[in-house]
Length: 317
Image 1 (cartoon, rainbow, N blue to C red):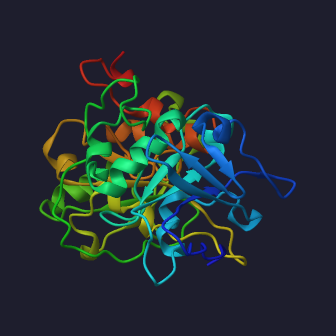
Image 2 (tube, one colour):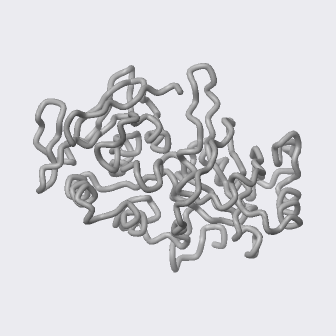
Image 3 (tube, one colour):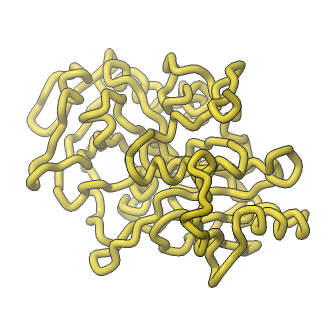
């Protein structure tokens, strides 16, 4: 693994980890100011209950994804149920800090407005608030109680009785089959996506025949019953981080789940790995290639593909 382990505080502090660096220097932007806590050395005391946030810096954590955070927690176990991350969206994008679940579904994330961070953490630590509650009250931008609109397809509630293996380290998009009830439907889906070649779907499409309004999906196909029933929230922690000698980076994971084979348009569930780890975007299979391409060239953000409740989806406008 290319990232160092996170330190284990001697006290019951929560970790606030900077993952945004320029020229090796940590960039916090306005995050610390917006949290509005009292500074005590490398600790920020925030909220009415005085939650202690220990500021952690190491340029080796540059671009660390929230989904990989739980694997960096020492074997002694987490001091607090979450790690807080000040990443690029929080530093430069105006988003709130990212809270990463360490206990219930490790690796999934939700954003909290910086001004509310201390109070929300106090409720999480006391058990008054659960991470599931944060997820249920998340808007399409991945923010707890944000005003971006409610997702049309919220993350599913599933029993936590399964452990899943790591996904393959692949550069690009990974398409994972999680439903094995419809064999003809699965093969029909692969054919619709351009057919498979050496484990990839849509890899050898003719550029002259590409419809730019419905950009084709190129993805590595994972067809393994070990991933049957895999929910979106558990995906980020299964994506291997790049190593020091292999910089391949999975940009997106897409799930072919029961909805894919039961609803018109064969909808696939794309899973955010960066801005809000574990957040799903459900959209017709013909549109997933456009999502992947726009994310790859940084033309759009993941939340722009999340369908909003009671609003016509962008692909039907």
